[in-house]
Image 1: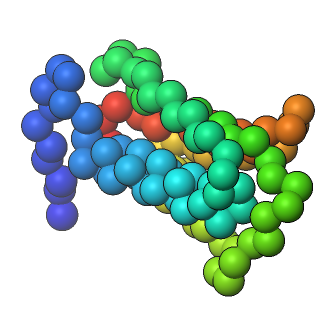
Image 2: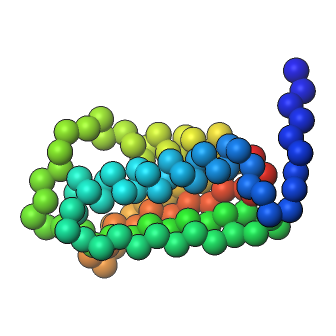
Length: 107
């Protein structure tokens, strides 16, 4: 089976688009669970020659108690990004939780 995808400058591939959406969705969910009163900052940039870069930042709450969940959301996103040819990383530093990701433009 051969998959043929029309590639148009300025049009992000379906898999990339879906994966970027899921990364932001998971970051919003995690922020609401773990730091509900913290501002959330999302930066998305990219070009067809560079791919898409995403950064999501929010302050780490010292009082919020995490709600129920599978605790596999970020690991699942890392797998999805890998399957799209990209990556997702996360870290807690300087009082912030930061999720960064890169995805190829056409995937």
